[in-house]
Every structure is written in C-alpha cells, then in structure tokens.
Length: 289
Image (tube, rainbow, N blue to C red; front, top):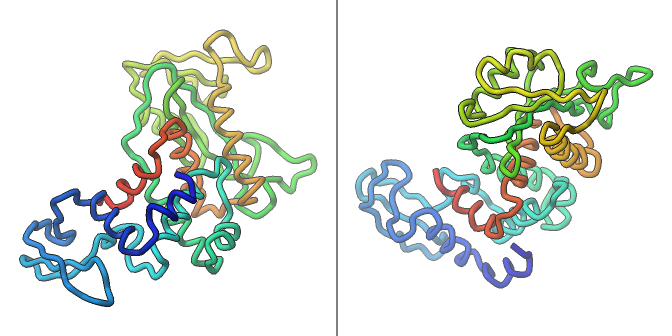
C-alpha cells in the first residue's frame, strides 16, 4: 500500500483501531483470554477501543496478544512502518525507519522486529520442481567478509549458514542452521518439501547425496554448466542475491540471534511478490492469534 493512502485511509488512532477490529473479529468480537463472545465495549474517554468480558471479567482491546500490544507508538506509525518494510525489496535499516517515522532508533528497531515476527509462516510446503541450496551470512560485523587472507568462501567460511528451498513459480522457505550436513539438510527439506509430488534439484555437494531416498533428485555440476534445461539452482541463487543485497545495502550484518527474523522477512516478501493486497493480508495475520 502507498504511504499517502495510509495517511488518507487511517488518519486517526480510532480509524486504525476500527480497521484492526474488523480484521481480527469481523462482526463477532471475542475475548482473547477465554474465547467468550459475551463481551461489551467499555466506554472510556481516554482509552479508545477497550472491551470487557462478562465471563472472565478481563478488560482488553484489539491489540491484546498481538505484535502491537502495550505499544505507545500511534498505530498510524505502525501502519506506515509495515508499508515501508513491505515495499522495500532490499529491506530497510532501523535507523532509516527511525528517521522516516520520527522515532528513536531503539523504538524503530523493536517495531521492525515485531513486524518480522508476524511474517513467520509455518504453513508453506513446496512441491513440483524444487531447488535447494545454502548461503552464508556475516554475524560478527565484518561486512560479510572473513579475516582469512585470501578470504574463504562458501562452506569453508565461519559465517552463519542459511539453508533454503524454492519451488519453480512458487514460494521459498529458508532458515538459519547451526551446520550444513547431510543430516541437517535432509531434516529441513523433508519438513518443507512434499516428496511424492516433487523433483529436487541441488548442486553436487555431498550433503545432498542421499536425498534420492525420499524424493527424485537431480544435480547440476557448476564446474561444467550452470543450467541443463530445467536442472539448475539459478532461481534460489537469485533469492540469495536479494538476501545479500539487504545485508550489504541496509543491515551490513546480522547478529546470530536475529538472523532468522531477517531471513523470514526476505521469504515473506518473496512469497507475496505478486500479492497486490499484501498490506491488508499482513494486518489480518498480525492480529489473528
């Protein structure tokens, strides 16, 4: 969604609350603590959007239990921050988000991480022609370079491994891994790829040697060619390039504990690249708990 549209569509806190209530409850508000629909709006002059539950006697609002809970930042700024992150193909730094939204850097960082938390999608399963590969990202502030001279690359590096799989014409799934071995690769791929309906394509790394035991498996020898018809890993390598450009251009490095959040952001935006209503979809997902 365009930023100017957010200003016109959500000019006040009440307008934002009304939209989130419709996204979360439609016409049937329920208590987030006990699930009861025996609720009534609480009339308060200073705190808008409050509800009372007549069963468990708790007071709450539509933000309870969501990424927005207990926030002191106006919801219009949250909506703008969501749109900025969704629109930024190569992501955006917390410092830039702080400047754009007139927030302190720590507040902007927390907002960005909360938004990324709502991007987690555990329902993605891949089928068809699926490419699998790994990449390695910096977690020590070294601008994605090793201290070795010459610097090591690929599996010889000390960087954080990230493994991923991508279906042709479909979605991508990726996550950090402690190490890249046959065992970890098989565990990851078996959890996200439907073996009976898929054909797996990888490079010739030995960690993939036993993938043919549960899914049809083809390999591409990059020393000979980068593609042999449909047998290639070019698509997922293109996704890795988006991940790397976000690192080089915006974040510079990821702390090990937060790498998963940034990879989740990259996956979410890739998987919704053709979704014209991704902003509205995200708000529904952010308050559906």
